Length: 299
Ligand code: GLU
Ligand code: ZN
Image (cartoon, rainbow, N blue to C red; front, side):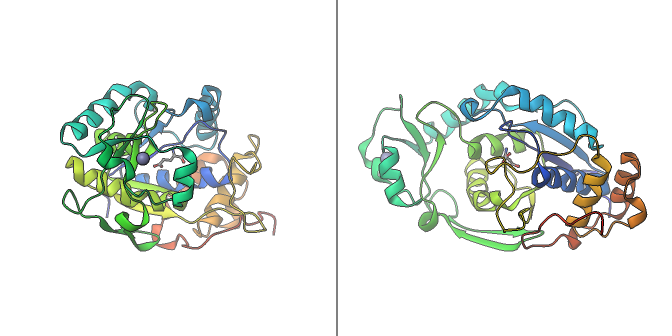
């Protein structure tokens, strides 16, 4: 049933151009929004300058347009909202839900991914230190189940599996967790479709939403796109760039990957025709929940 209140989004970081795996995420979130009569926003998550380059933002937007994925409204850049992130952080600090942490990288690594709360009792000043959010049952539920539309129930005990997590890094940069939760709320996002590499972050988002009194969007996490050896396609392991000259073929391949069963006759059709077919036939229920390799288009 069309949901006129649907607001979806695609939120790439400009750490490199889109590759097949990130294009699949963009396409799926676009189609889910459009099939539901909703709007689709694009937000550039450019708050980690050491890992990013503004030139990639322009490339990503051009790639979206090239593949017929036209967003609604203005593109939002997170770097323009740093004051908002600080304001929310101040609110959490005033409520004494955060503390400064001076642990070095070596110690954090030794802890193996679950912070032990060591600095909580030290009452350190904030300057030049990471700021962590307290994960306590007394603040908000710490055992969290996400009812994911693709992955099903995803359970995490934040206390045991994550611990108090970073909202602002020692270098002053705001964490992905903080910024994305604030922006999804400010932009009125109701549905999030993204890669399953972020599923393990989602319980932290849910916890933060509860601390801040935000409502929770619906989630759908797509399986990873992997190569023939089962390795994740990513910017880090140099996934092949998208072919700018053959967007229609890539879209067809992405639809096959998403198990939408595109007809052979659509292969090589104009981009607009592929998007129109895909929007009319989109079914989130068909999206697989295990890692997928890109399927060949020429068999
Ligand atoms: N900016 C994140 C990334 O590119 C995705 C954020 C999100 O979809 O929540 O990996
Ligand atoms: Zn610490």
